[in-house]
Amino acid sequence: LAMEASYAVKGPVYIRITSFATPAVYKEPFVYEIGKAGVPVRGDDGAFIVSGALVSYAVTAAKRLKEELGASVRVVDMHTVKPLDEEAVLSAAKTGRVIAAQDHTKIGGLGWACANTIAQAGIACKFKVLGAPDHYVPLATTPYLHKINGYDADGLFEAMKAML
Image (cartoon, rainbow, N blue to C red; front, side, top):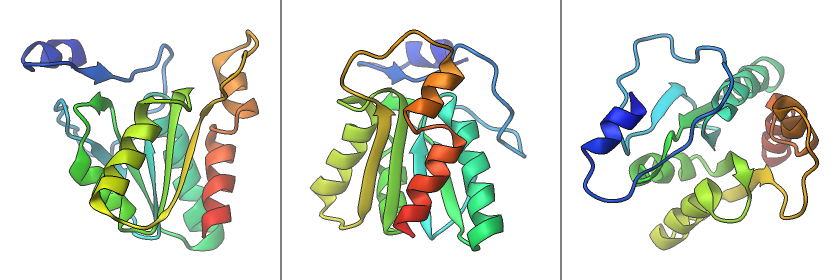
């Protein structure tokens, strides 16, 4: 579906997907559109802007934040990094707390695109990028690497908890 939709776009497209099965995150049918983020969890106390496998982690973290802290944290499924859904990023920034996380290096990609969009709009908020570190990462299973680099469900929970 993503590949077929990208053919209709005139210009570059950068789509983030995962190589393994993840739990469904949408309660209602989701209409996939290039450059238009999905929002499987609504909230106004903060926002996770995530892609690929990290969407299901963010949904789990948002549920835990609600249960344990009473915080209502939005999950923005930014499946398309280019073109970026700038409206979704700016709306998330208005919550005052944003964590952009990606199964990718922290340099460039989703985190930097979100940071640039927020900065260009002049919105002040707490902001953090989670992703693979800028050094050699050992070979291991994908979920293990997500955990040791702090962007699995527990890592997302702890990072947002620190912002609240």
